[in-house]
Length: 241
Image (cartoon, rainbow, N blue to C red; front, top):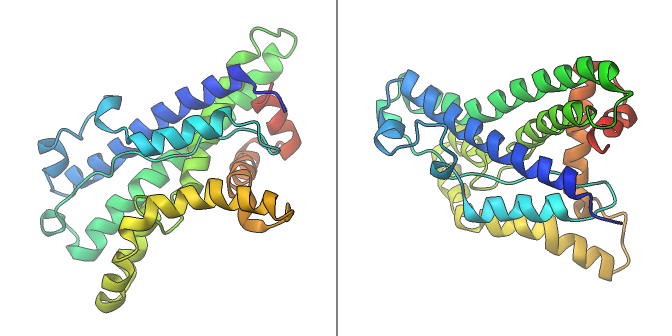
């Protein structure tokens, strides 16, 4: 399959904006709950350079320009926002949990809103190939936010799902689970690249784990469809124009 350069660039731009919003949401909720740590460490900002993670950004670049069967998708992560659980209102469980949930929830709300905007604009400009890029970018931005929401459910560091599981587990199990933290990025890279490559070599194209990026993209389409009343096919038509 050929690489859709325009779409790939839209995905990368959308990811960079979405990551800044994601990490800022974490910082904002932490500050609301009384912890000044994100402000002290310079994370209470929308400046992109304060939030980028090199490996997480590289993942997005590869997936955006990779000509995969189910199409390119913007997935990755930013630098986790550090907080002090002892300074958060709501206790050592509720406070950190709210901070951890802030990023995915904000991405979810932004993603749904921009999917609706794309849905409203698309019929107005559908006869103009140049103007169609506007709803396309809105849909790409919306779906990128929704894809990041789904990605962050995964329980691997540095994703928010890891932090959520750690907080909810009993102390002994949480300490055991924390041992997986240093391996988190490698696990993610293995699931997104090594497993698909191994499945192709082993001639097992239907292996579930070999299509995780595609499933996340389809999940983003599904969420967008809930608020736009569009089918997955029609959402893809706008997204992949």
